[in-house]
Image 1 (cartoon, rainbow, N blue to C red):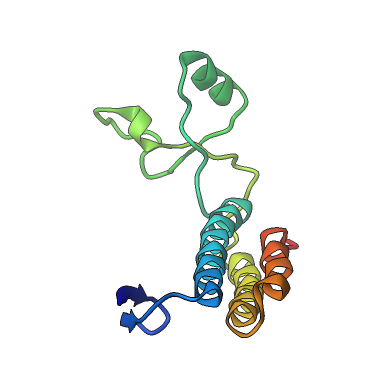
Image 2: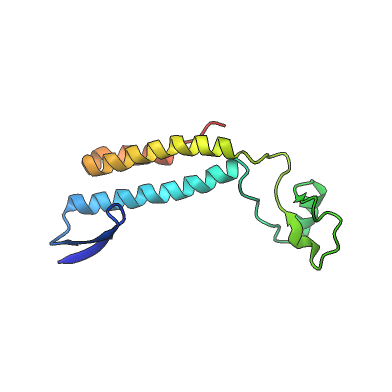
Amino acid sequence: MSRYYDEDLDCYVESAMSSDTAISRQYFKNRARGIGNKKADELRKLFGLVDDDAPRTPTELVKRIMDGKFVISKEYADKDVYRPSDYIQWRDPAIVKDKEGFDAAWKLFDVATNNARDAVMALSADQAMPIVQALETWTPTK
């Protein structure tokens, strides 16, 4: 007897033995979830909802400042602060935050994700695999 947490049912489930089908379905569900998390990060970055990583070296810091790849809030631009670097957002000012675009793209991706999850639960592993792989190659249009 084994016990596992089923996120779709939001409860623990007892099962006598895991069949090959159950193992495959669990694997593909987890894979689809992982792809969803990765795509969510990519979409947030694409639509300007996430800042770039901060520079790691002094050379990179100077280059990013010289290239103008940062934003300082008007509220703090001329304010006397203890650590001025804390008020720098490391992002390209040319990339505008587009929450509406993100929401529209996310809705499309959510449909694709739900279709993949449905396929995982209803089809054989051989039939579900290409659908999950297609989810991985899904790209939004801006």
